[in-house]
Length: 178
Image 1 (cartoon, one colour):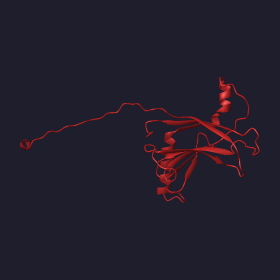
Image 2: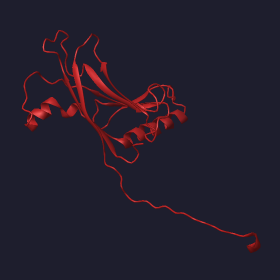
Image 3: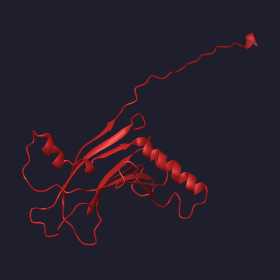
Image 4: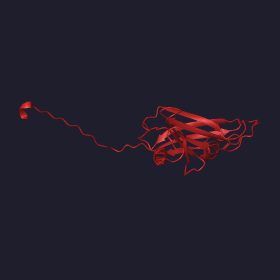
């Protein structure tokens, strides 16, 4: 149950092999994160086209080198409200009988803040009932590609620790009181 958090983050690195016979370029591959109650019928998916890091040696103590190895364009940083918003949007379109919009087909939109990234939904997933998570790589080109892809530090941010309230009641009654 991740409803008490505001965002999910994940850092991503992609590079071509040293001898790159497939000529891997930026955006030839995408990384996706899929999570929901199952992998096929009820899930959210967030997809990022990958920027390729050039080969070389990088200073692990340098923030400039870190931004080359872990480019900002490859970072997933999603407010969880975007997931619930796309579900509401899809359901509104489905209820107004929009053509091709159903719970069983993939409904996708591009992220307004990062327009190359895509958010998708299938079925009726809930961020309160996530049981599975899949990280995968898609080939966006028409030919075979080879790459090394790393993912690092998946984390939830913005824990909501506002206090709420609760109540408990107790009633004792005897038949003679009635």
